[in-house]
Image (cartoon, rainbow over the protein chains, first blue to last red):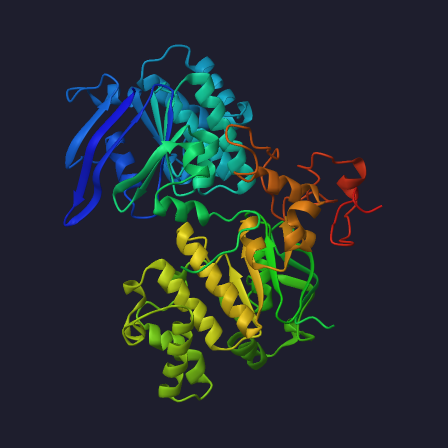
Length: 248
Length: 314
């Protein structure tokens, strides 16, 4: 296992955001955390990334220990956020953005590696010289993914990484994520509110509701024969051919 | 039958330092009384601009040619009083983000009764009517709700209030611009179900704007697909999957997650969605079309029998 989370709990004031949650991601595996706003899915992701501290519970990430420094952590886990425009430096070109990360991690042959990363996410030399504002939303998200893959992390956390994209672009990025996992063996922790995108990127899924896991299992099984009432409701409310919206 | 709402070759241009540039190239569409039409497309395709043109809410400095007619009257020719009457009585609009469209310091009751009071209804009668509509759409604890302010309500509850306010004025047409995009998917189902049910009961026409083809299909009679400031295809919602002919409509249907079995690759369209400004001179989709021919690049296809494509109309 690259990631093992046990009995995770996070309390903000009197509000219990995450309430006794356990899950794991195998090396090169892909796990989706699905839930609606307020379910605690993003809090779980932020704790794994080291952006929040858990109230209780244990997180084992590869061979990291409490004494590991930030650089070792950065080589283990990276994160891609929903809005690439806010997560990229608007004055930095794409090539320089990737080069900076490679340099920080002491990599050799940085120009060759930059080109490899751009190839991996389907961008070319023209894009390398561009500033974020010269790129479309989908291209910016590709840059954010390339930057996250630059230190060759074992785990990539994708927090609603395709939610803001138009459907034709979303399809490109979902395919790219599937390809990148095959090519690099990185594991994914994919946070999303949209169950329908999960099937293209993930093997397993956990469904969260009000801080707790209500169902867990292989994506195919959970999507086609959901067992928990809440999962059934969630799967049933995805618009699809022949769907008739109903009031509860 | 004459249409309730008719877009007749609507073109909207905006002046730029290099001359006028189009926001909408040519939009022709009609909505019958009581009919629901879905306007679908990706960012920048001109869906919102099309809906806003119905209320005369185009960007400052823009120039519109062609016409938008409501009950046969050209909206461009209305005087300020006529435009006010149209906005307050005949047509209601529901926006994506209810927090941005509701006055945060007024109560829900004030918001719901504003239009009715404006028409001279007594305070008590207006509150009675507003309460009745809230009850119709399944809002409980009415007396309490009417006294609440927007920040006290969840996004889904507030959007219900916005829909109730739209219905309160008894408009002939509701323009709904991505009304559920900001909501959770289970809340989205409730809110579109309410909108669908109430509009059918009241015989209100609906122009439903969405980026989600399946969602629009579920609540509309017909679907109009927009790309780069033009409608490229119009077809009955129930026949969307079977009858889609335009290459862009087909591409959208195939790109949707869920269109292929798990683990298989989604079919994608090369390039990025374009706005009317970037679109090629001929067919708007020519730059990205998988079956493009030389004719497509310089000759604009006319929307005929529901589709604007050279290869489909010969």
